[in-house]
Length: 474
Image (cartoon, rainbow, N blue to C red; front, side):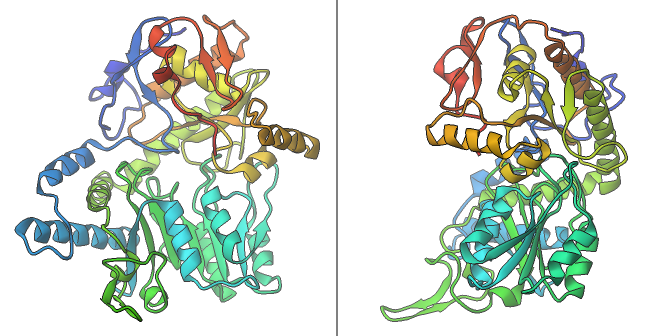
């Protein structure tokens, strides 16, 4: 293993790294056990799944928790201060999204809940059509199937689609009730031309939801979209908060998605008078800490500024994708050179199972990545160019409870807390795995999860705690 990079130096200010982190994340540089018995600084390259908390966010939460109290109904000082903090966070979400008082921000658990919430509130029927794409995360795919028909825009071999493909879907009959599209792929990092898509949809008289879960930490949100959904856990605020933003009029009548206390003005045994939005949409005790955390993240990203974030991540993306492409036996999925992406790269190593690649990176090098299909099965099937026979075979295996042959890829994804040294460490590790050099220890696969685990070496990797849950489930 190549352990020549001084990660502790890379995490310090400047650190001698030509691409140092823009902001520190809580726990950054903390040690993780490796299978050879040593401890190395943990290299977190799984930001597309969840980011660590910005130091400023962790500090804001720590400062707020001693003053925490129930919001909206308490008369005590703490309740009043907590209510003010919660509503200040809501206002910050609207400002972050570039919205006015004609819109509302509904605080949810995450993007998945936000999109399910909207799918219910739009009052769709089985005769209605929602236009979407095969690039979507399952969160922007499955909710629409519950209420309407879904028309999909296909992608090409590189996992991209053209604006004209969407225009054709908008023109088809019956006209869609909604265009539901991702702002950035969590698999390939590709950035669809969202502003152009919104303009085309509006020209056709179709409103737009943008799944901004992968976009929000990296780029400004599209101001023209009718609805936006994003999550705190991908935006350096991993405390369970998410947001649905949309026109106030959408939520002003009809039953809310969740029914219960806090969403009503009056209840009798025969009737209910619902509150005005957004309270109408937030039954139950809200996640005040999650809202405060997301507010702190919005404030911190504003201090860094989009130009600095985009420049940093563009440099990381170029180094990550070109470096992986240059390794013999490695294939990077998604767009090739010349197409802008986030600092995300899903890749396959010839002759090595994606789960084994991820397991070796973690156990031997202390690098955290993700493997599998990344909750985007239709997209991965296309990027991997699987045949119908291969799809049937792995589906049959899943029905037997066997995940061993599930196709997939390994994904590395960086953040404003990542450095050039992190990427170089990954590239050196992937190059060694792809070279065919034998692993220093033996690994076995758990067929029920598909994951690989070392069965020799440091005992911390060998007990149940070291195994954890399956990575590829999704």
